[in-house]
Amino acid sequence: MAEDSAVESCDLPVKRQREEEEENGVSASPVSMETDINGGKLPNFMSPVIPGWFSEISSMWPGEAHSLKVEKILFQGKSDYQNVMVFQSSSYGKVLVLDGVIQLTERDECAYQEMITHLPLCSIPNPKKVLVIGGGDGGVLREVARHSLVEKIDICEIDKMVVDVSKQFFPEVAVGFDDPRVALHIGDGVAFLRDVPTGTYDAIIVDSSDPIGPAQELFEKPFFELVAKALRPGGVVSTQAESIWLHMHIIEGIVDNCRQIFKGSVEYAWTSVPTYPSGVIGFMLCSTEGPPVDFKHPLNSIDANDSNQKSVRPLKFYNSEIHEAAFCLPSFARRVIDSKAN
Ligand code: SPD
Image (cartoon, rainbow, N blue to C red; front, side, top):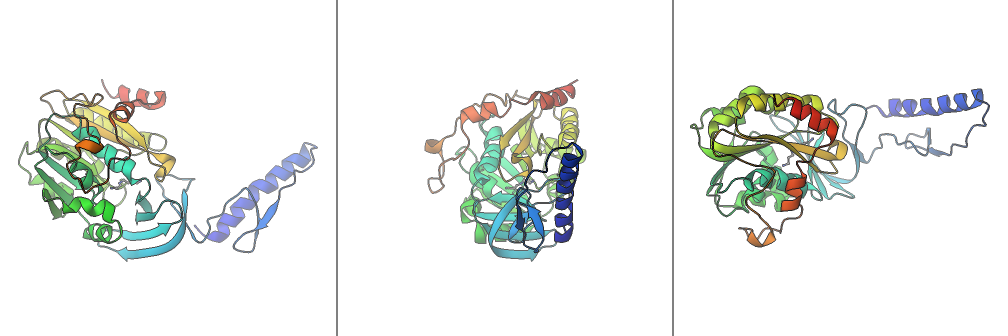
C-alpha cells in the first residue's frame, strides 16, 4: 500500500467526525495529533502502514492487516514458486513469510504444528505410515516424530528454498528433518500422490499455505480424491482449513467436497494462532470408510513424557483437553458445517 494513500485515507474519518459534531452542535472533541513518519499529521489513535513494521496485506483478508515490528530482515529470496523472507520481530521472535503471508513465528508456531499433527495422529490406534504434504519448515515432522509407533514419514514439499531457509533460521522447527524415519521428496504434492499406491498411508497431513499461489490445488476436489485413495480404510487426513472469521465460503467448499469423498468422519476443528489472520486457524479432519474414527475423543494421549524424541522440546500447546475443545464451534460456523451433512 502506498504510504501517501494511507495518510490520506486516515485524514478522512477525522474530518467527517468533526463536521458531524459541528452539525450536531457539539463542540469538536480535541483530537491530539502527532507527526507521522511522512511528516504529515495523523490522529494518535490511527496507525499508518509504518516503515519498520511488517504488515500482512492480502486479498484473502481485505480491509485488515496485522503488523509486527521488524528488528532486522535476515533473509529475502525468490524461489521458483514464491518470495521467501525471514525477519527478526521485536515480539514474536523470527518470522517466516511466503509471498507476504506469515507462515510461522518462533513464539506461536507450537499451536499450529502441534494441533494439525496430533488431532489426527491421536485419533487412530496405531499410526505407522504418515505423509506430510507441504510443511517444508519441518515443524509438522517434528510433531509426527513424537509418535513412537510411526515407522515411516514421507514429506513432499514443492519449494526447496523453504526447507533450506528453515534449516538455517529455525533449527528448533527444522529439527523434524533429523529424524531417521523421514524421507524428503522435493516436488509437487499432487503429482506425488498420483504415484502413491492405493491405501498406503495411515495418516496424511496437508500443511499448506493459503489457496492463492502454489498451494491452490491443495484445496480442490481432485486433490482430496487423491488423498482419499492414498489412505488405508479408516485412515485420516488433516488439512489446513483457514479461518472461521474470514473464510467461511472457502470452508464451506472444503466441507462439501470432503463429505462427498470421505465416507468415514468429516469434522472441523480450530485453534488460536495470534499471528495468523483473525488470530485463529482451522483444520479439516476426515477419515476414509473403514474402522470408525471419532476425532472428538482422542485414543492416544501424548504428553511430554511419552515423546519419542527426547532431544525435542516438550509439547507447548496440545493436550487431550484442548483436543476435545478444538471441535466446539461457534453457532454461525456449526450451522454452515452441519448444513453440508445432508
Ligand atoms: N495464513 C497462513 C496459513 C499458513 C499455514 N501453514 C503454515 C506452515 C507452518 N508449518
